[in-house]
Image (cartoon, rainbow, N blue to C red; front, top):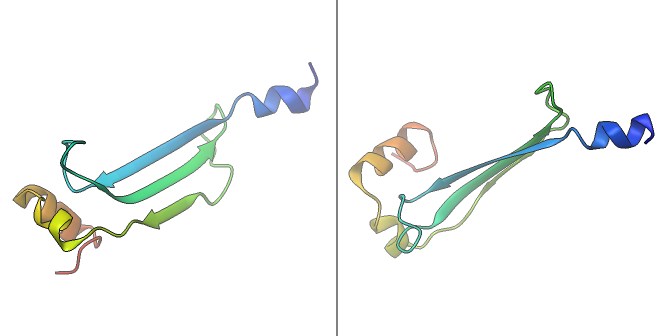
Length: 78
């Protein structure tokens, strides 16, 4: 196996989802972030960070703790 191919096999894709809550039957994704590292955890690129539109009805399903968290981190307006 060539060194170049071996290097491609040590990639790790990290995905982080922010949701309106923890119940997948009731809550929806509102932000997706992802990046790729090597086995030594060196970040190999810029990654992505995408805010996903949620309806007012979906946002209304959030618990107070989730509203506070997303307000504090800037995902929701104050």
